[in-house]
Amino acid sequence: MEFPFEFDCQRSGNCCSRPGGFVRVDDADIRAIADEIGMSAAAVRSRYVDASRGVLKSDPSGRCVFLEDGSRAKCEIYPARPRKCQTWPFWEELLRSPELLEGAIRLCPGIRLKPAPDESP
Image (cartoon, rainbow, N blue to C red; front, side, top):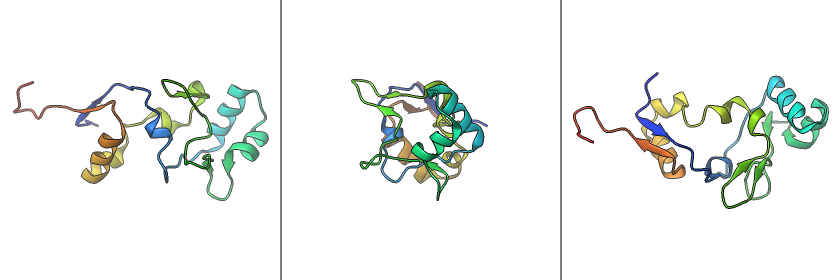
């Protein structure tokens, strides 16, 4: 799959603090998170997963519960972050929808469109 952009994470945290955004998690994600933070999978489910939707909970402002504040955003569970987080921004839906791609570019300072093949750098 060829994406029309390059990505160099700037650790803005924007992808983890977008109101209305969500990260669906499965059993493997929950086990990995549990191992990373030293909790049981049941405890992770209870504390960090919205059971009715199967997604990570957000804080009241819409930020991921694992987003740590600082001069550069940091994921508290980075080595065990869910697959959806691992693959950002290389999501198929960004290839299918110019509107979603445009929104991702506005959201994320690490995404840079590649020059069109007929454009010089």
